[in-house]
Every structure is written in C-alpha cells, then in structure tokens.
Image (cartoon, rainbow, N blue to C red; front, top):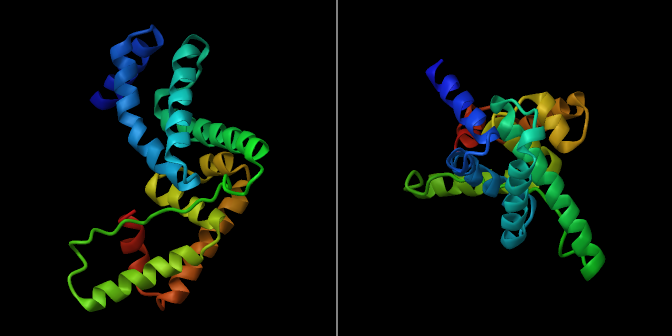
Length: 194
C-alpha cells in the first residue's frame, strides 16, 4: 500500500509540474520503452527520438491527462508504438524503401553464464531458432504478455486487434513452442529469461 501511495504522490506532483517527479517517471520507464521500441524498429536513433517525443507529449499535456498512475506503462508503450508507426510511414514516403519496415523481433536474452556446456549451447540455439520462426505478431504478443506482464485487453489495444485474436496469437505461439520441445516445461524457462 505504501508503494501505491508513493506512486500516487509522485504522479500528483508530476501533474502539478514538478520536474523531479517527471524525471523519476522518465527514469522508471525509459529502459522498458527502449527495449520494446528496438524490437519494433531496428533504427535505434529513431526509437530514441520517438521515446523523447512520447515523454515530451506526456509532460506538455499533463494538465489534460486522465491517465491513472498504474496504467502509465501501458499508455507509454501504446504511445511509443503509435509514434514509431507514424515515423516509419513518413520515412517510407521519404525514402521509398522497405528498410523502414516495422518487424517485432525480440531478443530473448538468456544469460550466457548459464550456458556452460555444448548441450546447453545446442538448446539455446534451438530455442532461438524456434522463436525466430514465430510470426512477428506472435512474438510481440508473447513479449507483451510475459515480459511486460500486460493484460490481454491492453495487448489488444497495442496490437490493434481483438482480445480473442491476442489470445489466439499467444496460444499459437505457446503451442508451437510446446510442439518443438515435446511439451517439456521449457516454455516458462525460456520466457522468464526475456
């Protein structure tokens, strides 16, 4: 309860224009946004620009803002995705290439220190190959569900699809992973390493 009270106090302070509260919120969420953004777009500078614009917009429109502090991460992820889509569409018109294509390509990190022998390296390679085979939508749905701990309704808004479609994306991805690994309990191990 104390943590909720602190977040609410920080949020109220931010809404009244306190720059230290804004800096706290920025520092709390910027890494997660960068990690998510670089999975949507390979251009790191474009992602950084989009993140800056999202936070600038949040600050400038704080008085009109009706976001609850517990929904801030969801709001920021959705705003970042929309901002990146706009930037990529503009770049496509400007450049006329598919280089600006938006693909969700997560890097499911598994600490290298865990992989000590050849069997573990082989398993890591197999997991990586399996995850890369998944369609971009399934990878993004898995990432948002298991790494960002978002609810299905929130994921549906981020992906701009129905809740049922999100459930199907996650189910199909998990089924593919289970089939690849013979139903062993490796799924949670893989996804927990995100």
